[in-house]
Image (cartoon, rainbow, N blue to C red; front, top):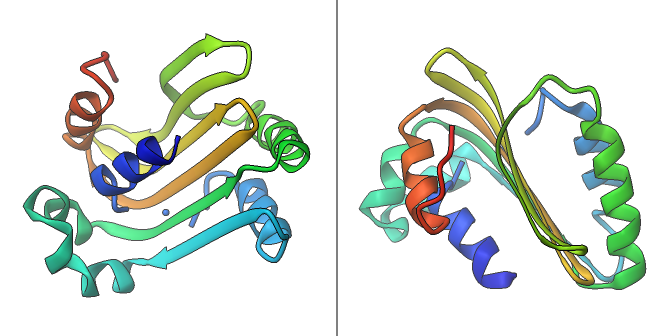
Length: 159
């Protein structure tokens, strides 16, 4: 799962979620919890590191407002996070781009808040056994980012 998180973070160095404020509350609640890692990068921080990101990522950095990652490898905490995130996402008007359920406890979901060809938010939610990762990306992102995500997730159809 760590490889997948790094891959998504590299492909989408973009995250604060105005679309689903409950997700921000979840991240805030776990930000000081042992067994949970939270990374919150502003657009300014990403732009400052743009040189190290490589040409593929640099083309999106100007459009990114924030990137937030929450990750847990602790079974009990992961189960709580999954329940809370599932509840927060119910009834929210987001476009489902990818929903892959490989096994009971292995799932990848990619959701987007889209206005025409502009994407304001992307949410990536991954569960793998006792591990969970929530990646929230915010900005004014061009729809072409979906093609880059598609090639990074093994050529599956997105969008």
